[in-house]
Length: 288
Image (spheres, rainbow, N blue to C red):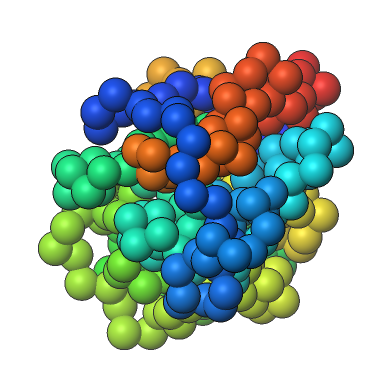
């Protein structure tokens, strides 16, 4: 994989408001446990974070930099899904909810504000045991997922069965994959091994010969025994994602209350700063 693809995130920092963003002070608190609301008796300098696992890398990156400047700390709940992040903000469990999709009308209608951070490409990967295959077509992707293509030989690779790894239908990545290539009604082959967590799927794909998977792009992919395949001769990059030539990407952002705590307000202001934009895009800049 070429160096210029490292990180491959398109910075897009900006607020999409459900109503006027209220940045006044309000009751401060932190979560007592994974399901309880924040308590006003707890320290006010803690920001509780939950939601989409795909958003955690960027939220943590900004949190580390922000903590170095302030006395604010971050309480990261076990990562899960965008829906739990949105609901956590609405029911006052989280100050920040990680999101890996754009907000829906129902999300916005519930009194939350959405902050866009970056756009992360979704990539198809093959285990390094798959030789002779560096590109795949849209039709071939569909053929693999529906079970019409079952051997790498059909794609110019070795005579070996394709081991398909997939994620559950309620994951944002699966919706992006369906929108781009599979369609809403395609029946996934029963031979697919389905994971509920991206990290587990990446681990399995890197450990399983002749495997195939669609995953969010991360730095660590460059260090694993997998190959990122171009799709119809297009690799993900800032330019191809922004232009739409590369069709699969996850919008990464955060949900906050319309009436955030003072600590959350300050973090949001930092997340919109030039410094944060530079931080989220610095790996792209280093590779140019």
